Each structure stands twice: as structure tokens, then as C-alpha cells.
Image (cartoon, rainbow, N blue to C red; front, side, top):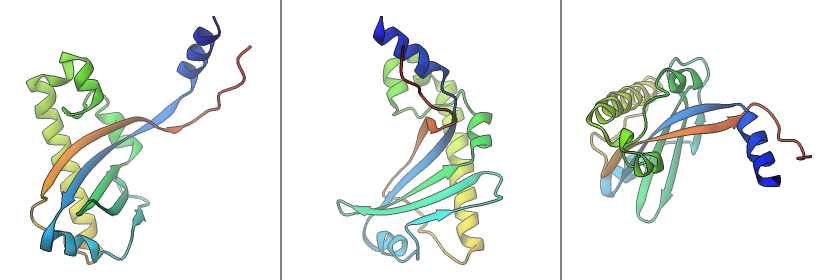
Length: 149
């Protein structure tokens, strides 16, 4: 009973999703990414991009291009084909989803690249790994969970 109560309350918490295009680079391409003068670039007033995150780990330099909430809502039926959702349901492994995934990734990557170019930064032409799409469905909670009764 207590678990059902908690699950019920968690289902009531609203959240705002984001979609993330993740890319990783090695070698000379990684050096280009490492030269970016930020780890986290918060973006305001952009139709598609809300944040770009740079990280270096395990011999890779990576970029995570985060969408706006509006963009993620527009494509709420699209999931990355390598996601946990795809592992749990055949629906997300479908050719239709893969085509939509490809389109969303292309939009995010081109928009992120264009944004960085407008700011004076050039990205490598090809990632060593990716891009892959991650749908972060409950990225930002819009409510609070109270103590279950």
C-alpha cells in the first residue's frame, strides 16, 4: 500500500523534458572540442537549443547538445533507438521511430553547430562516436513530492 501511494504521488509530479544529442571525439577532433572556452554554455532565447555541455573522460571529449522544453514536447513520441525505452518496447525499435530519431538528431546537431559557429566556434566535421539521442523525459520537475500519508 505504501509503495502504491508513493508511485501515485510520483505520477502526479509534472516535469519538463529535454532531448539531448550526444557526440564524442578523439584525437585532433577532441583537441578542437577541448579548445572551447566553456564546460557549460546556457543558451537563452533560442528556438531549439537550451544548453551545450562539454566534458572530457576516458580519452574522449564529448558534447551534449540539450534541446529546449518546447522542442522536446514537439517530439515527445520520439526516443533514441539505444535508450532504455527501446530495450523495453518494440515500438521504439521501429523503422518509423528510427527515421524520426534521425530527423531530430539532425535538427539538434545542425542547430547546435550553427549556434556555436555564430558565437565564433568551429566544431569538427565528424564525431568519433555518435550522435546518439537521449530523451530525458523528467529532466526538470515542476512540482514537489510530499510525504506519503
